[in-house]
Length: 271
Length: 271
DNA sequence: TTCCACTGTTCGGCATATGCGAACGTGATC
DNA sequence: GATCACGTTCGCATATGCCGAACAGTGGAA
Image (cartoon, rainbow over all chains, first blue to last red; front, side, top):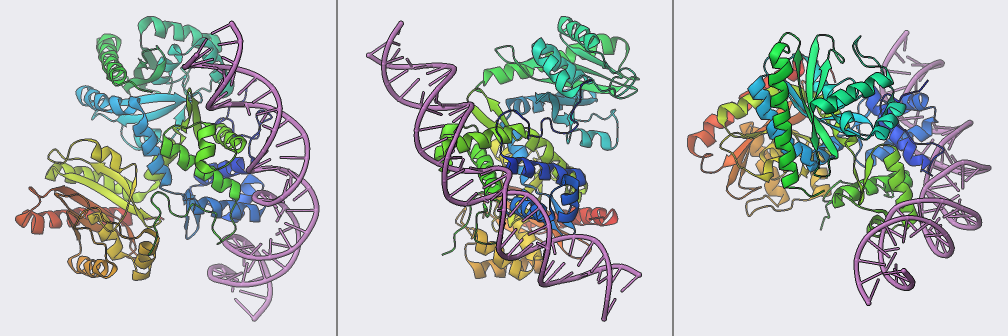
């Protein structure tokens, strides 16, 4: 039975390479603050099983360095993360050249469109636009704030299919194949069979594997060296994702956009 | 002569409260990686004046904890920052309730519109939309990736005017009043006079104080307790920011949107 | 090819910075 | 006004972070 980490893979303190215990603790503090939205020294000490004074000095140190801000009732993550995060996002050619294409695609199809990349075996939602006919509510805005498993999204499967098999094995080892719906692929061999089909087709389907009643189509975006940089995907309720539109029209459209992004990235290619 | 820190205020290691030296070093590593986009152990060691082995263990520790990723030619900031940053942004009521209003305002006026908040005495660009008639190019996308001084933007001055005087003094002490253009206010008393006028009017002007040829109008967004949460502002070339539009129409429109945001925040007010 | 110069990586020892517990200060709540 | 819970400070013992030196791997130059 494999065990998978829910939030951030490998929170340090392994037996592997030498690491700095204090820094790892600081990272745990950041994750704890994130998990609680807002937290004080005492609660943090209990949560992380460290002394109150240690919790306190970690909080104040992180505050001094701009990672946390103190409010009336505790500490929370500072906007420094937003600024740094926006820098990281804009640094990525996938985002820079993908964004305009996502905008076009969303407007044209009126569906929820997003661009995804992979880091440490999980999917990062780099950009997304909801078309008019797509789902409403909190779902979309929340999605970009978290990492997703790759095996139950169209974007994720498009990426997995483009990775070398041993890398996929490693990812499955680390993160497992948790089910989201009854359709989620939870078996290793079934997943590899599916990835074969994705490679044949050139794009991936997600047929109610993440959310009941929702389908998606994802196409990979590759390097000149054929390494995946990420993927482009489009999703919506099954009611509008069916028939020829689902089998032909949308896949072609998504693949075309993915190709445009590839070309743009590779034209302006450095790094 | 006061000295101001350009990037992140107070990079720890003060004589003030006890802080963790190792964590502060890790923070310096993060800033260094950010400054270089990508960096290796040797270069980092030289840049931060630490030993190569220390640089190495810091890099690997931060990588283990998901803050850095290793590439062919060094380490760079990971998308973890993007995910955390997006969480922080969405956590902010100012962003959640401000975004739709910014979208409306930008579409209606066709100008560059943004929402700003303050942290550690600098302005954070939470959200921005460029209208059709606004400036083109890299400027807009870059702005959200950095912090700005508050004294030379309309949004910033709107915030400063709503802060208690001692807080403004403190901010000026820490960050100074560097000039951006010939119009930038660089004198302390002139600034306070200007802030008085902003308070009288209820909104702030930026008359080519940040960029030559560009004006802006900013209005504060307040709490129920009258504490500033941030501000809303609109900017554009002087050619379309003049006459009655500049003196009356736009200020009224911006102030109205700011009020709408205030109401929405305070209606759903917690935290 | 061989050499060199440059990285990244590992190791052990010493100094010290870290984490703890206990004590203190402070503000709320009953 | 007493009690509680929290944030904060203090000294101390020891774990641990930092260093220098040595080792390994890589790429280029001759």
